[in-house]
Image (cartoon, rainbow, N blue to C red; front, top):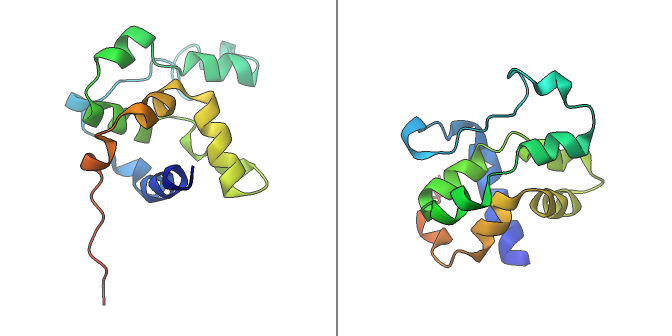
Length: 117
C-alpha cells in the first residue's frame, strides 16, 4: 500500500498536464459536459465517470495511466481528513486506478525528474 501512495503522490502534481488526446479515454461524463447537471448524487457522478470494463481491459498501460491522470475526480482526495485516506477512497471509487494497480508494468511509464540542486 505504501508503494501505491508514493505512486499516486508522484502522479498528483502532473494530473493537469496529461493532455495527449490520441492516447487517452475521453470521459463522457464530467463537470461542464452536457448532462452533468442531471446527475444529482455523488454516487451517480462517480458511476458516470467509470471506464467501461471492456475498454479498461483493452487499454495499454500507458493509455490507462494517462486516463487515470485525467480522471475528473482525481483531486477529490483533498476533501478527506488526510491524503492517505483520500487517495485510498479515490482508488476504491475509480475502476481505472484499481486496474492500474494490477498492471505489473505501470511504473515503467512514470518518469521522475532529476532532483534540482
